[in-house]
Image 1 (cartoon, rainbow, N blue to C red):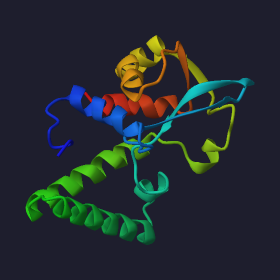
Image 2: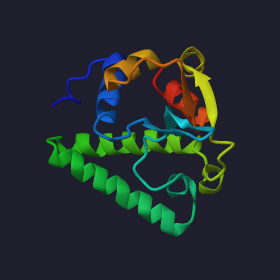
Image 3: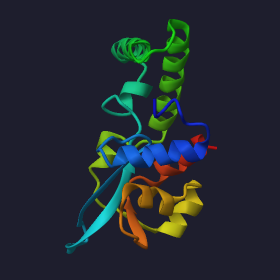
Length: 169
């Protein structure tokens, strides 16, 4: 119901932010934790998200096992759309769109090895800078999530959020 009621990109982003409040991570992952460079402070973090399979290799690796996993994943998505009330032909088309979007997001995600590098994954950005780089209204996102006003966020994978912003255009 709520998702089907979305009519524009502003509605998409509001829903993304609302889902973050329930620990879902559509489009990106948001959380608060101790600052990795100053443990006496708690700060906000943004990390890559928006995909359902474990990591980018599930979308991009071209071996037989990963191809089979992707085929089964699309079948699963299709079944979930039918379960939620879509006609079978619409469910098939929607499942293909989901896979296409998630694959595009996966292309800009960091590998498991790169995600282990604490220096590479610590990029403090002002809200204005982040909005400029991604085209996303982060003040609105944070307000919808119920996050107190802040001047900066630690961004784990800036290139991912740039890609996410581009997909929203």
